[in-house]
Length: 457
Image: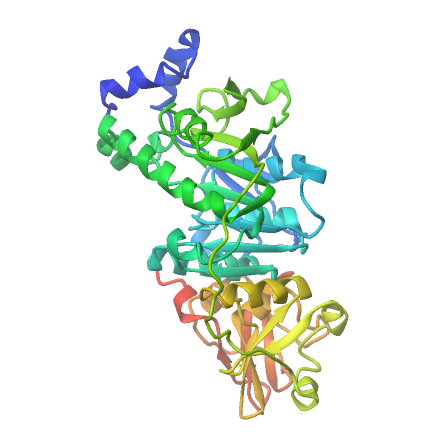
C-alpha cells in the first residue's frame, strides 16, 4: 500500500533530495528483526547464525531471518528482548551523558510499554540507581510488567498513571525518556495500518498531544536533569517544532550526542537542538528521530501530600530463616528484604526504598515482589526466578528442549531424576525458566510457571 502523497511532501523537508528515491524504495523492503541481550543474564549456548552487531548498541543483534521466538526457552527466560535496532539508541545516549548524571540516577520512562527502552535503560544502569517505568493504558501496562518481570532487574518501580496524576510528585528524575505517541511514519514497513491511518491531520493532532505531554512531563525533571525525546516518526512537526516550541515555556539547553560517521545517521540542528534520524535506506532498522536536552530550571512545587503510605517492615528473624537455601545470601548483602501488609516480599536498595517512600506518599506505584509469606511459609514468585538472586547450589530440574517447551505450556510430565522436596528451579541449559514444587517422593512435581505467560499454541 502506498502512503498518502502528502506524506512524501512532508518527508522531503527532512530527507535530502539526492537520496529520496532510495528512501521511497526502502519502504517496499522487508523490515529487519533485531534483539537485545540482557546485561545480567550471560548465556554460553545461545547463538543466532548470520546475526550482525548493532553498531550503536553492544548488546544488540540484527538477524538475517526471524525465528520462532515463541518456542525459544531463552526468550521466555528473559535472555533477550526483541526490538528494532533503531530503538536501541537510548543506551548510546545514556552512555554519553557521563558526569551529567549522578552515580545512582533516578530515571523515568513515562510512556514505557511494551518495555523495550525500559529494559535498555536497566541494561545501562546494570543494578545502579532506580528506573521508574510508567504506562497509562492498563492492557499495555500488563505487557510492560510481564516484560520487566522476565528481564529480572530489581532496581525498577512501576506505575500505571496519566502524567497529570504524577504531577503530585516533586521533580524526581535525573534522566527522563519520553517515547511519545506519534503518527508512526517510521513503522510503515511493519504496519499497513499505520500507512492507511496517516494523514496531515493525524500529524498535527499528535504534535499537539506531544507538546501537551511534554509540558507536563518536564515538570518532573530535576533542575539540571536530562531529557531524551524520541518518536518513531520522521516529520519536523512532531520533532523539531515540538521541542523548539517547548523552549518558549522552559529553559532548555540542547545536548549534542556524538556518533561515528559510518553509522550513517542523518543529523539536523535547529535553534541549538540536535535531531538524529534513523532512516531505513541508511541503516538496518526502521525510521526514528531522537533528540536530547538539559532542563536548566524547574519551578514545579506540588502541594504536600497527605496520602497514607503502604507500610513496609523488615522481615522477622523467623521468616528470614525460612529463606535460607532459597536466596544467595551474598547477592543480598546490599539489599533490603521488606514485607508489605499483604505478606508480599520486596527486595529494595536503600535508594529504591527512599524513592518508594517519596512516591507512595503521593501516588500508587509497585515494586515487583519476589515472593509471599502465608502462615509463615514462603512461596517464591516468578520474578525471583527471573532475578537470579536464588541460591545457585539448589537442586534444579534440568530440562531438555522438548521438556522445556512442555514446561512453558504449563504441562507436567515424568522426569527420570529424583529431586529434593520443596521449591526448585526449572532450567534449560544455563537459562532459568521458572519454579516447580517437588513433592515428598521426589518424583512428582507441580508446574508453577505463570499461567499468563504460558505458550498457548
